[in-house]
Length: 262
Ligand SMILES: Nc1ncnc2c1ncn2[C@@H]1O[C@H](COP(=O)(O)OP(=O)(O)OP(=O)(O)O)[C@@H](O)[C@H]1O
Image 1: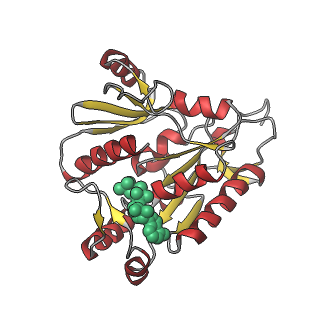
Image 2: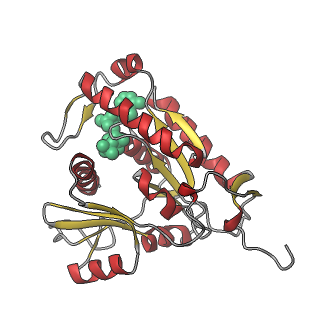
């Protein structure tokens, strides 16, 4: 879905580069806000085979390869892995079908969903609204598949719920020297160019952004993948995703419903 990726990405970029609030993140009232609380009670959690899968959430600085990794994982086995279909208020193009590329909705319905906190994040790009909804994620999970989405760091709180039990994977840039070597033939999408080769300042921006994300959110990462060689990163991602579903993990205690007397 290049259209969506590009639109939401550019809408995110505008949000970061200006003070104009063009991209919005949902802040849930469930659990206490762990961001403001340095200590969080955790418990060991083992997913039961009949439980829905944990939501796989990727995040990282812009351009690091989050979307590439997500795309490759889904391509590996589309019967197991699936992204969430985004909502948009833009009109469908000839080949597009509602519920396949996007859920095409009116602005009124979209606004209603915003009002009812149904989006993890949403934003406006070229006059149209785009967003990832909780219901779209739940639809994938309820179908028995593993849902994999990418989010902005600010949306971490919105996915850390007992319903979604998000497993958060941080995609970290390798050192500058390795970025230069591995991205020689890669292209970055910016506000001005759909695709152009990476420059040193893109790498520096990526590193700066990574530092900020890590300083603020490190404690929420279940797994860190240094995206050096793409093939290695894909293997690491697949292993992490399998582990997240099949092996016991530490999760916030408030995700596990308290039993009487405990
Ligand atoms: N390990 C890698 N080695 C070489 N090129 C890579 C690697 N990872 C990603 N790329 C390339 O870097 C470019 C940017 O990756 P991608 O579009 O996934 O970024 P992103 O993290 O989703 O950023 P944004 O949120 O800004 O879209 C793409 O052309 C992608 O193919």
